[in-house]
Length: 78
Image (cartoon, rainbow, N blue to C red):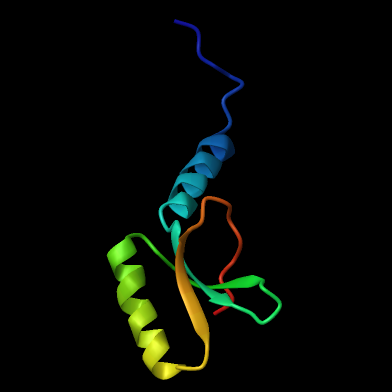
């Protein structure tokens, strides 16, 4: 049986990393004054994001936060 000599392990590693990055799609965004949003934390589940958002609202009552499902990756600020 012929073997696939074109196989590159790095390709499968990249696929694994991409999958792992997609796991944390729930995010908390801080709403900035100029209507932009800044991702401050990422979570695997919506309930985890909601719980942490309650904590953030208690710690920073003057800031505005919202839970978002972020299918495009941008890095968290914190």
